[in-house]
Length: 132
Image 1 (cartoon, rainbow, N blue to C red):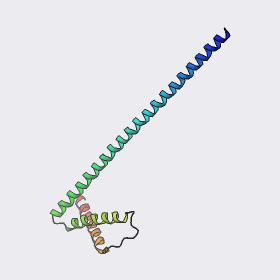
Image 2 (cartoon, rainbow, N blue to C red):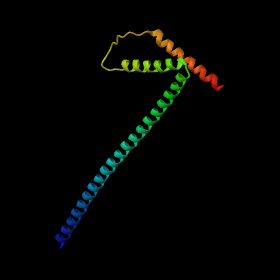
Image 3 (cartoon, rainbow, N blue to C red):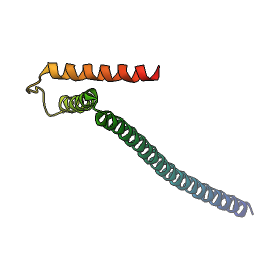
Image 4 (tube, one colour):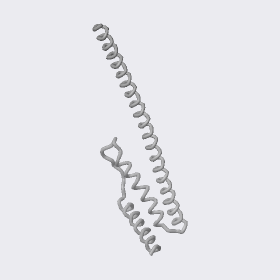
């Protein structure tokens, strides 16, 4: 009788241990599944926000180009200077940021850049004068 009770207790202990391991594996798998889902949702949200940011940037660039085009159409040479200076400075920034070069030798007439920047100042003054 004692051995039978002992065998029954061992059997129950073995069953409980197996159920515990089973439940542990289930919970571990569910956790891994949830982590994969959350990671995918995070990537989706990041892609959505990046696309929205690119769209806003494109809209801003289009509006700036339209304003410069309108100013050029009205014969404002400062608008041309602004547009050229902006593109010139952006190009210089990209050249300077290149990781594959340490020294950049190029003809650079500082006067033309400064003149273009002066044109930007004049454009800003004109815009401010119209708003006041």
